[in-house]
Image (cartoon, rainbow, N blue to C red):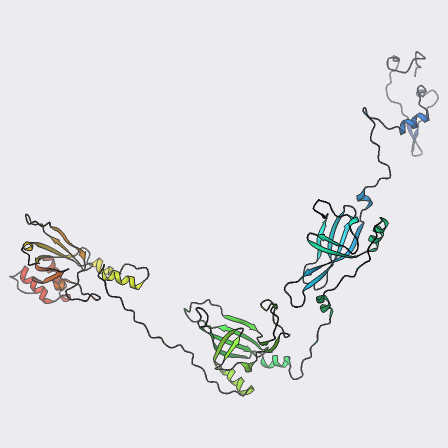
Amino acid sequence: MASHPVHGLPFLPGNTYRDPTKSAFHRSQTLAYRNGYSRPLLPTVGVGRDPITVNQLSQAELDELANKRPTLTYGQANQAPPSTFIPAHVAFDKKVLKFDSYFQEIVPISQDERYRVRKVSLYYYLEDDSISVVEPVSENACMPQGTFIRRQRHPKNDFGDHYHWKDLNVGINITLYGRTFRIASCDKFTQDFLESNGIELNPPEEIPTDPYTILRQQPNRTFTTPTDFDKLKQFLTMDRKVLRFFALWDDSKSMFGDTRPVIIHYYLVDDTVEIREVHERNDGRDQFPVLLKRQHLPKYVKDLKDTFPQSVLEISNQEVTEWYSPKDFVVGDYITILGRKFLLHDCDEFTKEFYHHNLGISNFQPVDVKKKLEEEIIQEFPPYNGFGLLEDSIQNCLSLVPKPPKKNVIKMLENDHKVLRYAAQLESPNPEDKGRHFILSYYLSDDMISIFEKPTRNSGIIGGKFLERSRIPKEGSLIDNPSYYSPADFYIGAVVEVFSHRFIIMDADEYVLNYLKEHADAYPSDVLDSLQRHLHPSEGTF
């Protein structure tokens, strides 16, 4: 490499000159591998370039530059943390303070205990000041155990402050979520940690015990089976042998009560009782066959406290002085089972033989429990008041919501549009009524009558409809059982009374005669002869 052309000038841009003879601009190799290690490449004589010796820094200056901290443009930089700083989550990792605690829980419904003492372990995690409460799992506890309060930070007052390990000590109460825990003791690590930080620990306390826990620690009572009673022998000899009684459940004293037939089964194999209902057809009751499931029935129970929940707990031998046995079931007597009275009125043949051989009872007189036949009340219709039709009034007596009276549909279809017409005159003492002519129409489909008056000029009476289509009762017929007019009552010269008006049949049309001839067996011959003589006098009688 060519030396600096001008000596004494500083090595700055602008004070150097390019070498026009230089053609290689690559970077020279400065490292080489020898014996498997990278080492500086030593220049050989006449090869490479000369080392730079201008503006070289001494070793002291290099050390000063290495230890110098950079400064900002405005003000000094923040002081760097000391190299010995360790974060809390690293310093207190997996370091937990353990306190043995307990709390008292009230038991409202129990005969054996009033309160219960539950032991828990309170853990304080130093890394994040969180607390968790864990209840050790005990055998046959019959309640959920394990994590009581999950790990979290707990507030100690209303200002948002949280519990710190400085607030914990032995022999104090701590409240978490409304539950007060009493700290009784702590482990060795917790004791050393608190004492090393200047906290004086209170003397440890004993965790109290509750009466129920002491009762459970007692050994179970053992019972010795008497020699004169063998359950295995009872099972082998009495299996599938059942006493059967026919009874009546007398529930007549209650509201809407009644006597209901039941069957009582007494199982000799284990002295249990079952009650089954006897359902009759259309009795209006749900088809539940079992009234009382198979179980042991207590006869006499000890006087228990009023707080004893008999409706929740099962009655055991400690509360019962005597159970029901076969000698308590006597035909003809009442027996009270769970507050209900049953009358035993009969039993089957096997039950009679069992009582005769084992108890010496042979008098089994059945009780007659058949219901007496009540006198049938004859329903009479009230007297007709004259309003509306009689058939419509009767429908009000037959049902709460009256329905239209049933009609003879077949008769209506066969005789539809068949009308018998008669000419009639009004029988009246008034001279104004003379000369009034009426047409009486009889409808065969529903046996109704309508009357139409022919208009007469200069008579002073307006003609037209005289009577609406209706059924006309005969004169002298009863109001409650009326007899209505029919074609058998309409002959020549017959008097028909319609609501206090008397009409005289004067004539009939040819259709009336033809209809009566077709149904001669249904009408009297006098009516047919009268019409025949009037309409066809030359032909004679029919």
